[in-house]
Length: 83
Image (cartoon, rainbow, N blue to C red; front, side, top):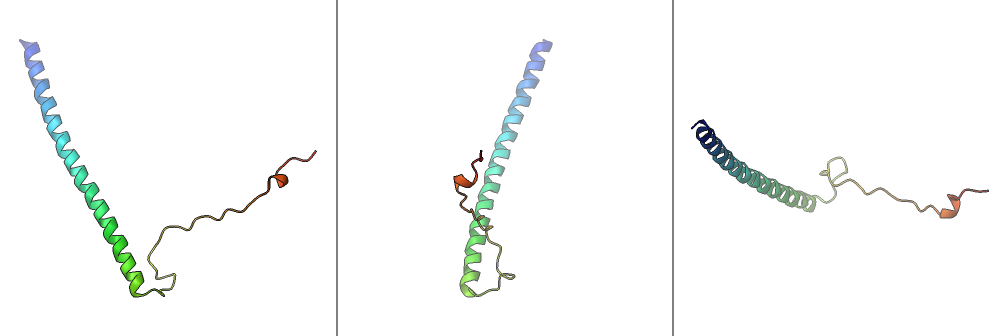
């Protein structure tokens, strides 16, 4: 009898955890959607600001992606060991 009671309680707890996981999943999807909407709006507004005042000084310009590092060509002959 005690085993059936423990099994029943475990089943109820598992069902409650399943429901909670579903709610958390829906909330995560909503947060993810909101994040991408905000990113889209930010990019759109930044382009509008740039269009309105294209000659902004660098200090006042909106933050953009960091510049790509410059890569210099190094000939293999200069790297080879001599001797």
